[in-house]
Amino acid sequence: MHPFMGIEQWDKIGMSVAESANRLHRLAYIDRRLARIEAGHLIARPEYELKGALARMVWQDASFNEQCRNRCRQLRLSTAAFDKCPDIALERLTNQVLDSVSTLTLLIALFEVVKPAQLEAIDDYLQRAQPIVDEPTITMLRHQQLDRQMQIDWGQSAATELLQSASEEERQDAEKWKSLLENLLQQAGGISGTEPRTEHEPVLPELAFSFELPNVSIRDSRFKTNRRKFDGMTFEDNDAGRFEAMMLHRFYEMTATEALAYIFFSAESKPWAFHYDVARHLWDEARHSWFGEAALRAKGRNVYDIPNWIGFYEMCVNEFDSIDEAYTHLTIAIEKAAMKYPPGKREEWEFCRDKVQDPLMTTFQDFDWADEVVHAGFGQKWIIHDVHQGDQDQAQLAAAVTQEKRTRFMERAMGQATSDKQVTDRFAGGY
Image (cartoon, rainbow, N blue to C red; front, side, top):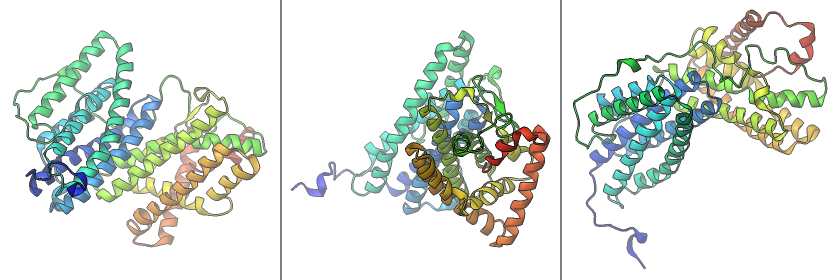
């Protein structure tokens, strides 16, 4: 039998614990910064497909960071040290990526510069690591390579599509932006910090831009939008009408995704564990939106003909006083309340399974229910225990205040509901 279970180069010296931890620290720092950038641009970019893709990447990049965080702790790098910026040049690079002025420049930054450089750093790590002593890291990084390459493949395809319709000026700006970011990366010595560092820096004032979250949701030109859910829409007062509304409820959860992206982006003072949970929560809501989109497409519906609801994000940003209040509304007022039976998430699943007998939506609602249980747990952890020190009654009172603010916001946005919307309002629960 082959010794070492077939592991080759078993006598390689490899890297020290300190060097291994330092490289992982730098790689993971970029992941954490990219997750925040992706959350911010998820809101700010109009392209609908990009919003869902960035939500997925927020979760994936947060997961990469979490995996490296755990491994670095095993490699004797403290959590306090891990949370610090390992190199101011990497901070400058990621600050510039955040300030990407357009969808095209964002795609170029992520998928032509930073993420490919991360893959190169991983490849270099795998080549240098001692294959027996650092096998836990090697296994972790090999699994990460799959998702990282998938991100790059999707992003480069999207960038190519945009470049085909871009003006000559936009193409030139994209090339200048790429050159600037590559120079900043070189100033950092690459992702690993081991490459020769350059000092010169091109100045591109025409691309100067400072990123800020928008106060309103943005959709591309294919969509019409509603600030009040189902405004101007009516449904039959029967099971068919409820089923139609249920598919739309799921489809409309992109606005909840945007609200969670706002929370993730704005929660810089919160611990990493909060960001990690919100990253999962954010991606779940994007998946739920895809549930609804897939169900509607399966019925032959053109999703671009359906007015897209944007009001939940706008309410969270403009009506609530803090991200804690916004997260209270999400997790306590809505998702924890959805655990009641009946009606609640279990009853929605039973409705699709038993009354409508739609196999696809039955599967979607089954997993929607499972995800909402997780989200209610996030509310228990971060709102009831963390914000209200375990006081359930105080958390419920705070949730009731958010419901009142929601009512006032929607009334100001669209005016009082009229009689022809009574059937619509019957199905207008949840987000």
